Image 1: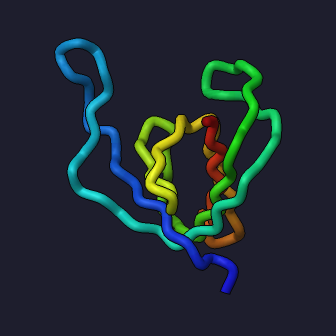
Image 2 (image 1 turned 180 degrees about the vertical axis):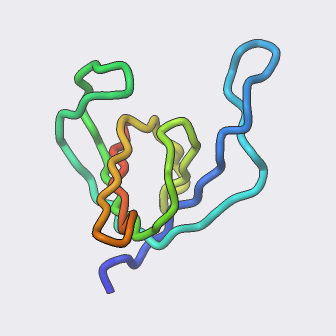
Length: 100
């Protein structure tokens, strides 16, 4: 089994009065493999950033870069990119690239 860790997701629920993002208190836990990474990626705005962690998640769920993810070490780093890899039956796994 390669997915020996977990990543916890809190879906984005909206915005607070001051404009900061708010997140659901409900969580979803995914089996994952999280590795330290030194890789350049483009964030949602098209800027080139350096990823510090990559999480591979085997799930058919549609994951969003706007959600909050807690890594096995308890950190909640910035999400730089979410890639979904489908097969002939639909979504198969996701790769999430995190900044610091």
